[in-house]
Amino acid sequence: MNSLIINTANEELYIALKLKSKLFSKSVNSILKHNELMLTKIDEILKEANITLKDVGELGVVIGPGSFTGVRVGIATVKAFRDVLNIKARGINNLKLLYSLATVQNKDCDVVAINGSKDSYFVARKLFDKLYIYERNLTLMELKNIAKDKPIGMYKTDENLNSFKVEIDPNILFDCLCDSTDELLIPVYYQLSQAESEKLKRADVKICDVGESDLETVAKIESDSLNVNVIGLNEFKRLYKNENYKMLSIKLNGEIVGFVLVELSDEINIVTIAVKKEFRNLGLATKLIEHVKSLAKEKGINRLSLEVSVNNPTAYLLYEKLGFKIRRERKNYYKDGSNCLELVLENF
Image (cartoon, one colour):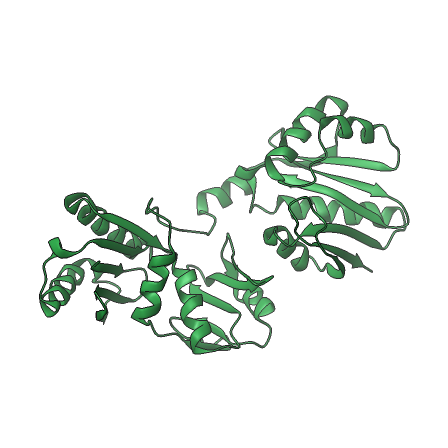
């Protein structure tokens, strides 16, 4: 099958064509002219291969993250081709592509990054032998902290980082197309929009004790958030009456959007914590944990502990950022067979 891939997500416009076992590619550094040059380059590559667009049986497009305008231009073009030709089109995540390219070029690379807006970076890293893509942009300092001294793969090197330039290999590009199952072709953007950021700044955020009438809401947030080891409403009701446990909710403009349940002993164990999906990446879970730290200090306790599945890297990375360290790992701990990481934070 003849396959055509369009990549307008980066400064370099890149077009690749696979004709049976033969590869063709065209590239030009034209970040401000992707829309003008893309069709010309597609026409050139088709003529070089001596075929027409009607001979293409499959389409691919890099759906981001990357240039906001570039991504939308590429997706719009591929959707138009797909509809006219009545063929399949699939999306390629730019960070997955970059990671595949970078790790072939440099085996010491665990982290890749793409420049975002306002001195921020789209980032992916190897975590628990899988690729983890951050759901928000990272700052320069955050990126340095997770990369440590290892080289960072980037399409364009950054003098502020230990980075190396990654070149596109059409073979790997087509491998990524083969691995993709994304036929929705929705643009990928991970950063929090300015509107959402400003909305949170203006919001009334409060942390308070969970009331008995709030337990159904808390149980619903937990069941919608967790896939394993769900506590459930009946257990919440039992623990609510146990003086060794404490539940705190976080409210946004009066609405409960998250909660934390802790067990009080010689250390404070965070039994479970969750935030509604639509309110994540706003720093609310961090606010809850910071409140738990204050509670520990009031009680003269200098250690927090919690458990997290290796299949929940988003939660693990939050705890890592807050200073939690791995105390031990329990194999096949959860019902889904995943390992449990027991984390601890001391002397805060």
